[in-house]
Amino acid sequence: MIKLRQVTKYYHPNTYALHDVNLHIKDGEFVCVIGQSGTGKTTLVKILTAEEEPTHGQIIVGGWDITRISQRDVPIFRRQVGVIYQDFKLLQQKTIFENIAFALQVCGTARRVIDKVVPQVLKVVGLETKSSRYPGQLSGGEQQRVGIARALIHHPQILLADEPTGNLDTINTREIVELLRKINELGTTVLLVTHDKDVVNLLKKRVITLDNGRVVSDQLMGKYVL
Amino acid sequence: MFLTFLRVLKFSVQDFWRNFWLSLVTVSVLVLALLSINILLSLQAISEHIIQVVEAKVDINIMLKNDAPAADVNNLKIFLGNIEDVAEVKYVSREEVLEAFKIQNIDNPDITEALGELSDNPFNNALIVKAKDAQSYENLIREINSSEYVDIIDNNDFSDPQKIISFVRDSSAKMEAFGMGLAIIFGVIALLIVFNTIRMAIYTHKEEIGVMRLVGATNWFIRGPYVVEGVLFGVVSAAITIGLVYFILNLLSPLMTSFLGGYTVDLIGYFNQHCLIIFGGEMLGAVILTMVSSGIAMRRYLRV
Image (cartoon, rainbow over all chains, first blue to last red; front, side):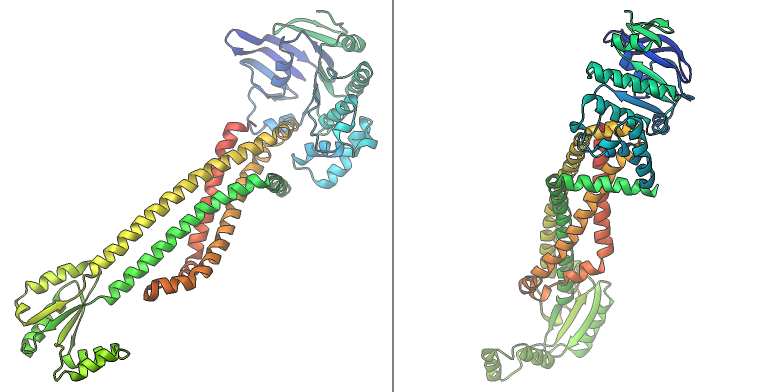
């Protein structure tokens, strides 16, 4: 569950990234957040991952009140929220297996667990045969699937996708969207931030529209309308 | 927890080797700083030793008139013995002085021959006075010269030991100040270099750090490798310094013996005796310095 109550974020006194945002996303929902560039979509993701603090308001993500979270608890919280980005954020000098294993290593997971879990998650995203390749040897769609695999490695309750198809062609975009839908069907709440009209219309899920940091529409089974 | 520590250690060692040249420069400057501290300690040990030797060797020889009554000589001896600064007063007869002189110059035939030609013993009876410390000599001489026994004294023959000791003290103080300055300069350079090295390491691992944050690595895990790397710089530099100190001392030992002669000091023994406090302290100092430096760099450049 994600809950935002009167959330406001401004960087300068008169420059609002988010303004009085109220949202309630239930467990297992698939929500698209749309809006033009600079409307506060990325700020919303940063706030939901505790990368930035809101200026006002309360945010509850998966049972955590992240407006009151201690620095010590932030890493534990982040393990429960998977995030994928437009630029994949993969380490180029590591293989696909190592990239995903890295997410477990830095959290203190034992080697034998890593060896067991990583192939499983690679299978979920359909990359089990490419585990020894480097990111540079994969297509954009495949790299994003590695990003998804890494985001899923801690079995998060929530998956935040910040423009995940922004760098992909139509075919790869459809593959990623289908994968996200599959993940959602398995019970993970998915929040997809995008400005891709086709993706939103293809999904036919709840659509929240942001404009100048405000929620201007919130439709169930919505379409891309700006 | 242990597994996490091992991984932090592994990351820091990897980083140490990956940026080998940067690590080498950092360690070298730290070694120079530590070496200058050891040079400082060696100078201190040498000068203290020289002062001790000079203090032990220099006496005041009070030559007595040959016709001085024995009672007066005895009174003078008691008078001197009662002075607080006096450690020891010893009476030496003119015969003993002559014997000692002959033994001292046994290898010098000219002196032996000249002595043989003399019909009488050219030496006087003497009182040899040893002061408790070198700074008391001046005061002692003043007391002797102003005493009632000045009439039975032929002359008091001494070289002012305080001048020698002052010279040694002044020279060593100057050298120590220079060494201290050098150590501080190297220390500051080391601080800046460690700061820069850690800053570079953070910059190089910017992506990795970003991913660590993203996937929920703890703050300790993100910062740990840089703290450990700082510690590693300190430990490696101290270890190299220990090796270098013993190597240099072994090399210089024979030279020192010929240069300092009777004043030579066993520096290897000195370092062996105080190794724990000297090298332990230096290692601790280097580790604290590098940790402070990497701490500042992390505070500035590593947001977790």
